Length: 151
Image (cartoon, rainbow, N blue to C red; front, side):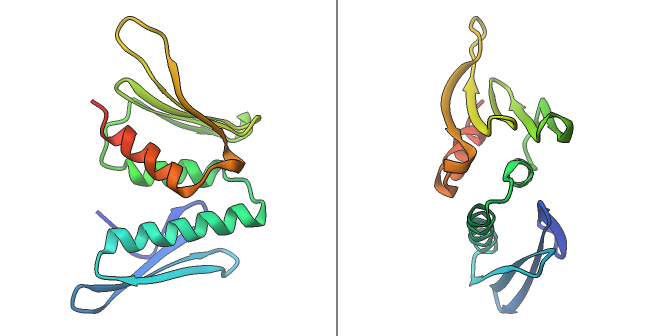
């Protein structure tokens, strides 16, 4: 369920209004007043568009994306049954999100984002790895879809 006027991802607050029948104006505003905005008849798509703009802003400013990406994946997976879900400030902003035989890990010290999978008889295998600073929103969407569509 999408809630209005709440912090959606690290320090970015979601606001939306239905400006006409099934047309939504969506804004994400950070604590400094920077904002992203779009209008769309599909609320989920509009929110995702604003998140992608916020991601670009954070990246351009050179801000740490550790908490932002963690909150982003948590938002995407809010309806999933996660086995592991932890974020640690004391470990350089490292985090892990795990479901069944898939997991996404961020090594906060090295800023390495890794997507892994396993079978019953094998160890964890890296399926995708990139520096967080090189990551694109399209790659985040691809990881989201792969993670959600796993058993």
